[in-house]
Length: 229
Ligand code: URA
Image (tube, helix red, strand yellow):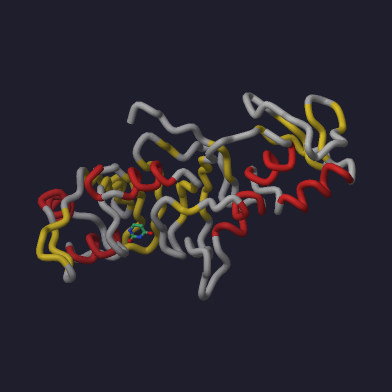
């Protein structure tokens, strides 16, 4: 692949901008400054530097963000900045999208990718991808509430009850709720339907992905999906 094309598909700008990066001496390949924008490079296991910052070629990018409160999961946010503003510009350039959404005030695990197939699998209600949330609730949790969440609650826009895979009280005000599906405000509405109220919501897990304890709020890392799933 030509170097400019490779840089372009990795999100470093238009073909012209990528050629300019090379001509300006800002690109290093295999430890050497690149000078020819048309040089042929093999993308396999390729690492390169732009302005001294190291990057690896990735055909598709999968990113996990520890979402802070106060950010919207939208390309065109209305009231708060987009979660994309927390990531390097290359990710926006190469079309990363959030895998589902978290509310503006929800924190925790958010996946982003430019792999349409992965996005489809992870957001399809038919695939039953489990999501684990930690909800801080206003009133002390009762056994009746936990039982009702697992038995299924009816939300006003859907006659079918929405069932939690599990509902565990970690302490009197901390609910660990595992759900599938991705209805609007699903967890908040399920908790409200059993007579309690979510005051803070944090996602800890989604399918095979767990939020690493050392990934701080606002930080991101690459992840590799398990191809077998
Ligand atoms: N359920 C909610 O109510 N909000 C979220 O952000 C995610 C799940």
